Image (cartoon, rainbow, N blue to C red; front, top):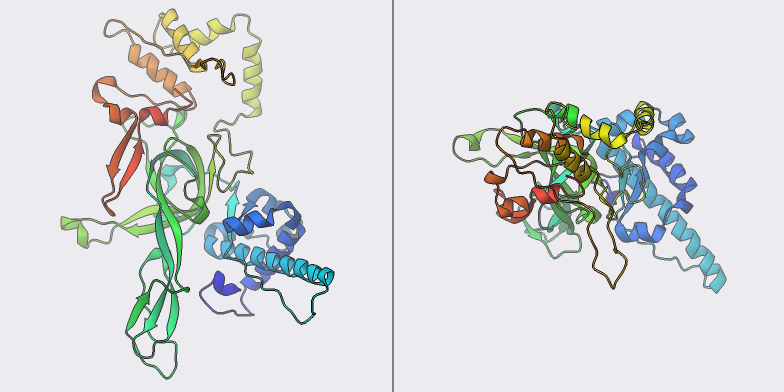
Length: 437
């Protein structure tokens, strides 16, 4: 069983055995809340981080679970995977025994239970880490980031286990490839064979490949986090198995995963230096754009990107009680520019938008509800300042200068990856500003 998760043999005295038993009790108490067929089909299970920590059994037996998950996430995630695998195996054996009794089959027959590898997808993980805080000290740690997808690569097969055939005796052994890096076995497993030459067998049933995809996530900057003179930061994330195709360019996502490093492919003077690039090995992806997420579709807390405190709600209630509310909104927009109330009124209407008409009527053409505003005036009147003020106020806004952009730069452009040479779609301003300004 543990060979599905761990590459080493089972040790009864391992400290992770107790953790696996506790997780088994946790999943057993909640097994009726999960769709077991869906778990087997996707090869993953959704684990709510908040519910996991609030469980009495978990909090009493593993009070340092939050620290352990942050410091050694791969071990804890493997323990969760082994636990749910054991629970599903026992549950299927119990159902098979009941069915065997109902059908009056011979008692000596044992059903074949073959459950694939199951990954634990943790969502609702806290706290949220800003991209500017991702440094070398977070290597190997469990983090959560939120941003906009600006680049999505093609889906490729990634070999996680590769079978090698010994050239001396013909014995076959399977070698785990960490992070997909090609690794050759050092010696043959047979004691009487001293062969050190091996040939990879990619068609062997012991060879395991999974779907693999990379995305680039750009940080979301609110008004108090904007830094003048700096372009938004980005980080690359790797998606595997059921997480691939969970987002498209322009989607706002929350990604939970492990910080890892990869060798930077340089040329010239930098090719001999030990340079590494930080990336995130994604464990779960929550898409807040209304599409069904592959890893956190049951999470309703991840949807809105704007969270209001009690103080904010009281301020909104006080503003709502004003007599001339629209006048207050217009005068509050870009107060550094004096006057131009009609221009500010039009920008305020564009900021709030309208309602679509005839969306569900098949006999009529739908009418969009978001207006387009064209501002024309002499230089130096503050047109750009007012537009930037609207982008800063909007929860999702992108500001571009018209004389320096192209059609492909505004929509979607094809970019070539320097490492693999493949082409990928990179989102432009219109895609990044979707459902925003």
